[in-house]
Length: 558
Ligand SMILES: CC(=O)SCCNC(=O)CCNC(=O)[C@H](O)C(C)(C)COP(=O)(O)OP(=O)(O)OC[C@H]1O[C@@H](n2cnc3c(N)ncnc32)[C@H](O)[C@@H]1OP(=O)(O)O
Ligand SMILES: CC(C)C(=O)C(=O)O
Figure 1 (spheres, protein in one colour):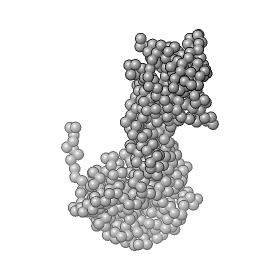
Figure 2: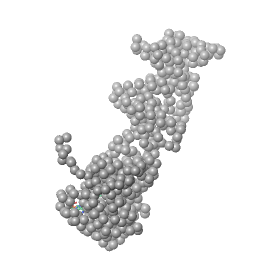
Figure 3: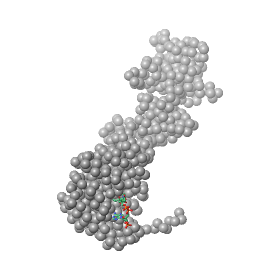
Figure 4: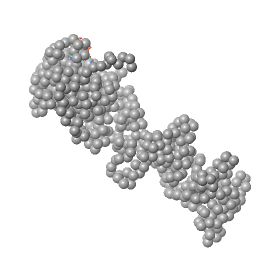
């Protein structure tokens, strides 16, 4: 691309890095989560949420288990102000939940914020000002010292307002645009604010280091976090927090590496709603932890319900490929994936039901409220016998013999290819029924009776066209006898009867299902299936179905 030179810029790598975090394999426990859906998420919506919507969203966040929730920017609008007042006055904030509000470092904004906070039992007041080179030069047109002064003046005013206002307040400071700030300057600003607030064990302060715009690879952000963690004053009384955005698509990696590098807290939103490409997605972060066997301390056991509320209130959409939440993320259309998943599910059921290692599926979809049926394996022209057999078994209880599954599999994918569409389970079942089950043309089975039990001598009544006749055969079993009768009377021959049967529960009724494969002299296999309450009749019907397949195909090719 021709304009590439204009993006050659530095990354503010810290002057020293110990990279100790690179030795860690993963987190050992969940960080403290803070949802910023109602602030950063909300401020990025085409139409920010109204009072009712914010209240409903807040209730959902509480139900999910968030203990820290940034509820808004009270000085931004009447809705924001009234929402906070409603939460406080109507005592809608559970005792174990701390609300948080954001304010610029400007006197009238801070004062308005505290006006909205009056009576809050427990609230974090979050102060920010931009510290980046670009914002200093272009937006604020201020020197480094003047930028420090904005932060320090704001920090002092927060202290005064907190003293004057009824309620319990904790402080948070964000050097906004941290990732575009020289690291030692960011450290200097944060330490200046800490110098004002002087955190203690009883009164810790949150220092939040946002990737306001994500500008580097995640290891650079993590190195910056490590450096800040090691050089911040009052570190033991500082809760180090992350606030990644997703401009480079690395919000999750930034958060995970940032936590390894020393952060204790992560701010983010559900499904990553937020400015531009969004905030870091807490659903993904939490379920990544879960996939490593670490309790995320958030409840995403019913993701479909959460998505439905989220989409209704934000008017945003969770994309089909969104980690964990997306409609297609547990779905395999392709044959080899389906085959491995179907085998893996069976293996797990038989060998290790308490564990999860099914190929291609990071977690058990059921754990987050997704169904196997219709979710995991879906059928189109890329599908294979394993997946098609799995659908028939899961949805209709039909456990086809391996070779029949292959035969049916090729048939189904051809149908999908020609129709250029996905086939739903009921369509697959229809095809199966039409092609294989109780096929009665050109030869219809009417009844059979035994005449001699020694060699299973059997008389079978059949109809071909308008003609009803009896045919007779003997064999080493009843089915063999009927098969011999058919071969002689119809002048056909085949070998190798493949046979399988099982019970089939349909509603409250139990039926028998039989599958029969016959091999023609040229080696081709023909399949039939019979379903009947009588197991013997089901096998005869399966045989007739296979023979009819054989005759139909033979006739159509001659
Ligand atoms: C990275 C983030 O997401 S930060 C959060 C951003 N969220 C929002 O902005 C949503 C809510 N904001 C609002 O409703 C409005 O911006 C308000 C009500 C807060 C302020 O509105 P206004 O006063 O009309 O103006 P505006 O936001 O444009 O402010 C610009 C002025 O504030 C200054 N300013 C902006 N941010 C800050 C800050 N954090 N601290 C101090 N001053 C700031 C700018 O330098 C500019 O100063 P100037 O007037 O001297 O040029
Ligand atoms: C206010 C800060 C934390 C912010 O939203 C950002 O930098 O993205």
